Image (cartoon, rainbow, N blue to C red):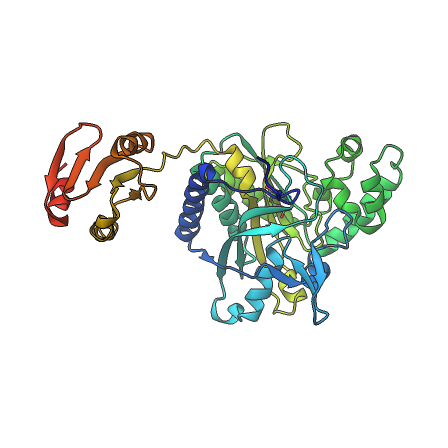
Length: 410
Ligand code: AMP
């Protein structure tokens, strides 16, 4: 049979066979964030279009499209395509800069992008990320990268490369932009059409291009490092020496600029070592001017976002099967009340139960219990019988108290 309805292109169901791994991964990420004293933030799925358009390059950049609409009161609404802008909005609205000068937040959320669906690129996907507000010190950059590295290690994602760069101040960026524009303008012949479009609007983003034909042009482009001042160079060296001391391996990537206008200073990305085109697991960087741009006080900040679907694919983490403690067989409706009372008591005592409401016969239920890896079969009729499925031991118990004693002594 074919379902009358299919999922929307670029979206996916996470089915029971996978939700265990998802939950395990989410637990690990919650725990690590909290160990580093980051606090969870949850923001609405919808925001005003302007939040993304005016602050983080959405719609203004050619490849960054959102799902948007106008509601009944003519408000322009977007499904959120990224989390930094919503978190900054909430940070300012909540007045956190007053109450929490060194504010560390993390999130796990679904995001929506109207991109061309392809392997590893969905229209709805999930991100885990952190944002640290209030410190301009390079130590904060080290800590943020340390959180990312700790998460990947805990998720058993091994074959990765951390790319790091420093793109300097906004002034450096302006100089670099001019330099790049000149360079790329002289090399448009074999350039991809996407990059040609970016030449006028945002030449720095050409460096992010994954298009094959752009790679040889990018390889010889001027590098930003030559424009950094002494203190920026010193910061970068300090970051690298701290990563060395932590034994976090990295590669210096002079072209890693993370094209969005709001970045400055440290930028980084973690990729898998496979040749897949969508091999970025995590991207981050400093954005010291965004809070002020969005109406808050001048506040340095740095964060990263990691794709959860891509982390799941790369993770070697093993989860066990769902286990059932007690399979309840009760095939006579006259015993329903007794059955539910025992079931409630089992639940209250933290046992996992499976109740066969189909009322097959005991023989079939035994087969089913084995298939579902249950530990005990509990047969409730006039009597109550409990059977250890592995050892085949079985006894009759007179009430729940006796049943509990039996289970505890096993
Ligand atoms: P970004 O917010 O674009 O810096 O992306 C951060 C991370 O989110 C990437 O490194 C990917 O792992 C993941 N990601 C971004 N876009 C998608 C998408 N369309 N589908 C699945 N994962 C994505």
